[in-house]
Image 1 (cartoon, rainbow, N blue to C red):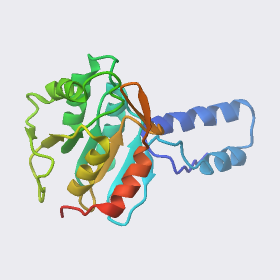
Image 2 (cartoon, one colour; image 1 turned 180 degrees about the horizontal axis):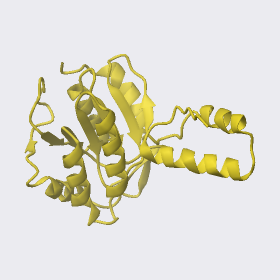
Image 3 (cartoon, helix red, strand yellow; image 1 turned 45 degrees about the vertical axis):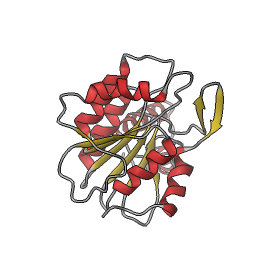
Image 4 (cartoon, helix red, strand yellow; image 1 turned 60 degrees about the vertical axis):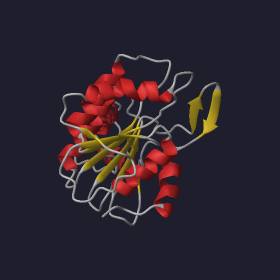
Amino acid sequence: MEIRSRLVGDFNIHNILAAVAVGVALEIPPSSIQRGIANVQGIPGRMESIENNRGIHIFVDFAHTPDALTRVLRFLNREARGRIITLFGCGGDRDRGKRPLMGQVAAKYSDLIVLTSDNPRSEDPLAILADIEKGLEGCAYSKVDSNQVLTSVTKKLYTVVADRREAIRVALSWSQPGDVLLLAGKGHESYQIIGNERIPFDDRQEVRRALTETKSSS
């Protein structure tokens, strides 16, 4: 049985195989299984592609654990022709132990990294980002100012921008045609938790807005 799908990512391959197995077990006609899978548009916030006219491959994904980020970045590394630019953070009042691990994963599979906030809650966003930075130590990465214009970059670089809205704009300004930009951690979420407030914020809306407001550094 030949299966065609618009979904990308290793986890979607596993989900599709599971769906096919269930369909076969239930004796659903193969043509119906094929048609059903082909018609799936995608899961919001799971390797969701953001269309643009800059030639940048932009994806929004919910990956917020070391394992999930590893799987997404491994897939992107296999498929990418340009640089991998990863934007992510870690939640506040949650497992601090995973923060440097997330940094290590991003460093292993990315060319450029933008560290930013992801639901800091009651914690100081900069303290969370400092924990993530520990994972970049010894990974041959250099820290740069977010205002630095990057052209023809061959070194591994990262920056820290606590304001996620501004961080998205920085990541876009660093992106050139053919690059892959991954906005990880929030996925389908439509809010940012800062202190006790739940503030409207959606990576997909923010990056679309930023695309109309920023220019590439190329």
